[in-house]
Amino acid sequence: MVPFIYGSTATPISKKDNPSDPSHTHKWSVYVRGVNGEDLSFCIKRVTIKLHESFAVPTRVIESPPFEVTETGWGEFEIMIKISFVDSNERPVTLYHQLQLYPKDEAAIQAQGKKPVIINHYEELVFNEPTEDMIEGLRAY
Ligand code: SLL
Image (cartoon, rainbow, N blue to C red; front, side, top):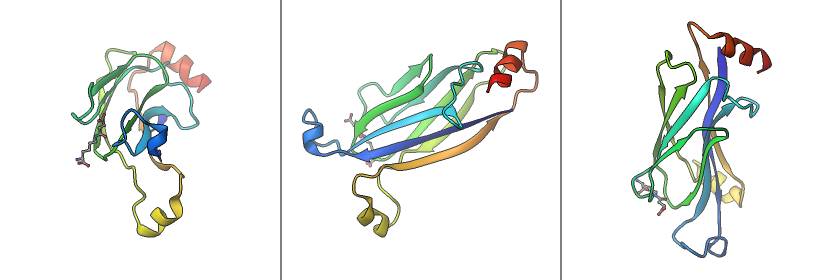
């Protein structure tokens, strides 16, 4: 069993931080990583992250860690995250994450200032027949 985190962090940016596109209000990252930031490449081969179609290149394929996309933008949307494994016998796993730029309640928006909005989901990968390499990797995890 491999515990991991997927989610996003988003920080407001001011126009002068992003003069090329003043409509962009936030800088954000979406990621898949170990619960303490560990590198999961011992079992993850590739992470495909599908963004909203308003992005010039919506599908991002990440073949090496960090399995992460950082962007600037203006809106919230659902992100598809597909995880493919080193062991090709393991079926890829598809997850959905709602990108959140703004805190949920009014009080938090007032208090926010430039603090990031962080939404993390904790999940576990269960491999029925882990390979020797994976067992070795898990020992180090
Ligand atoms: C909304 N349904 O209207 C959502 C869509 C899309 C956000 C949000 C694009 C950035 C760029 C961007 O931030 N799209 O132009 O590269 O709120």
